[in-house]
Length: 618
Ligand code: M6R
Image (cartoon, rainbow, N blue to C red; front, side):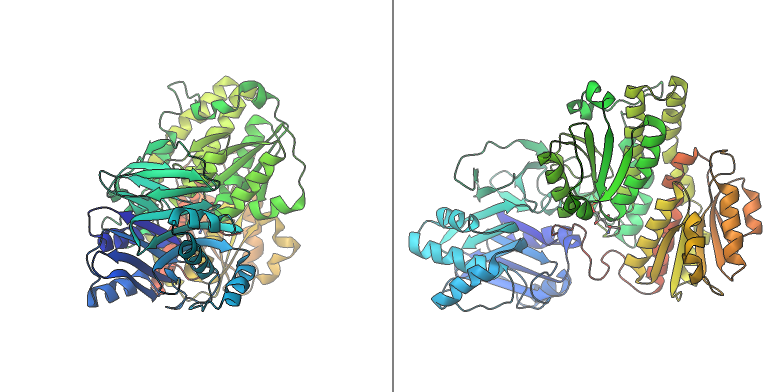
């Protein structure tokens, strides 16, 4: 949560900061602010509660002076309400010459605040962050050495933080520190950048360095120095950002979410690219870190993830267990870590995360590594902390996902899950070669099928608009349709703020059927009737049971399943595919349904209330 940007160089700093914040606003949008140092007037700060547009309006009305150094912040509130006063930057020191922005939570802030209050420090906000501003200013006043003062204070902080600081008396340097929250450096020519992720600066440079845990950055226009918290120099590896700034812009779509839904054929195709050969066999060079002997001796896989990514994990579980015959359990990252799970060297942790910065997932993987397990990440963000800290990474290549609601990252994660399942089955020889090859070849057909789904969604759009007054929508699925039902419900909750639940269709009769009353909308994922192992007739029975009690049924069914239309008010057809791959197709109407319903209610689909894209607090 919270987006952070820093700049030093010849460009107009306000423009660079506002441009960066615009691209980082998905990380939090409770308030926004900037501080710059003007060569003539010293430190100037402007901050406003609400979305970035409020700050932009204020700057348009009262221009900030020309400057070549500054920091900017977009907030997702933790300590203190989203007011102007609690917005970042926070100023420190008696003469307020230091400005600080922070992403994360300083867990020992109360103790540090008490210390400052005893010295007579006055606080302007209710945030934990302001404590760090005053402490650094005090240390600097005492020592006269800003990097040393900064290092002294960050070493005293507990919790999660990325902190950026500028000081009026040192107008050529931005200092940054990172512990348990993301920070990336952008390397320019005579200019340098800092950001929560590369989106902050990708329109200016594609050369980047991911800052490691407990590292400090001393950033000037012509130099970048990285040190550990205890002062040792760090040699950092540079990487090249593999997407353009245009990939993170709406490009004529009404919302980022609409664009990202439409990006899905490409996201799936790019995630498959180079990973399935002409014989249909999977090559995953990225997971060389996990040698074949280790894969053969795997006793268990535990998938850790949160939210939508956890549903990708649920689908991967079906595929891995069926094809590679390894027991898989899927755990919400925040529950996994605190229940003392049993882990051995032959347990593989698969951590799934779009951002690679979700704190719950990072903490779960660190815990597992400490216990001796190996970690494989499925991640969409280059240089993310999760990718850095894992033994191996399968990158999804969905491109930047800006809308808070995850769409293309999910279908890319499902794709990566299938690739992993097939790869494990290949190495462990648990599927005949002919089947492996058939599945691999079929996976390559999925991008075209996703396009066909996207081309036939008018009915779903109309339904979304018609149902904008619904008080509650239920989703039912079975087998791989169950996680899709959960995802459909999550999308509706987060985008349209209406009650929605996803159930395993077989579980209905054990309780949830009591929710069914006259007119209750229920969206049902119907398995393929072509697959002897799936459960289409049982799901049809479930539909009959709820219709008998008044439910209004919308079925998502496979083309050719004409029988379903007798049992549902509406049927949305998706192309035929192997049952295991159906979620990549069936989830799309649910995304579009939530998008339309939310839009019809006049809500902000890209930035739903109370949420942030990347949840970097536990
Ligand atoms: O970045 P991650 O994939 O780790 O994020 C996990 C969840 O926070 C995320 O999927 C969340 O549930 C989305 N807002 C759902 O649309």
